[in-house]
Length: 221
Ligand SMILES: C[S@@+](CC[C@H](N)C(=O)[O-])C[C@H]1O[C@@H](n2cnc3c(N)ncnc32)[C@H](O)[C@@H]1O
Image 1 (cartoon, protein in one colour):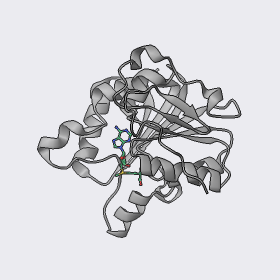
Image 2: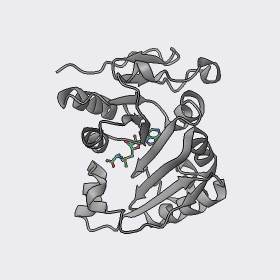
Image 3: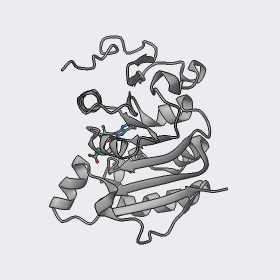
Image 4: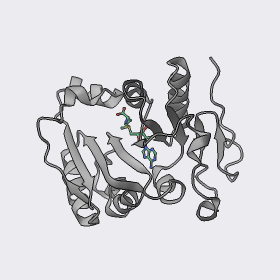
């Protein structure tokens, strides 16, 4: 099976571009503000509500979700090319029509390329925890980003994050409250980790007996 080739490897400044079932967002492109927003028709064949998985790794979790719910278009967002390529190959291998993948930084994508109020559901599974205190500034789930996520969420949009890192879990809660855009939903019996889906890091941490901390939020009205 062929690979998704990376057109920006040697030309980091080139423009974002569409490929079948993929979108490339070069990090060092300097005109994100002017480029415009994604055209969903170029990524998905049917018009459906859109769900995002940020930091999607190898794409296992999102491809399973998409197979289980064809009434939603699923967009995976991952910055590492090798993982994007694995996701893209998985999409074709498993013949799943309703998934596409973005290679790029979720922060840039959300701020500049996702149409406002267009997303119904956002998932972030095991974002990098940056466990050392001096690296904590690199954590993704911080108030400015949570505000940007709120701006792309439609009315009643849901946000679910899961981590095995207690410090990050506590910080996420604080940051969600501080963003003022989301309210935290109590985790009732409806949130079942077994049913939630399986990802590489989810399985890894569960096999090591680590506690997982899910956080489920709804966009404020
Ligand atoms: C710990 S892995 C989790 C992968 C997957 N969700 C799983 O559960 O197996 C975190 C992933 O987030 C990606 N990542 C980190 N920061 C990112 C960002 N700003 N934008 C997109 N992806 C990011 C990393 O490249 C890595 O693949």
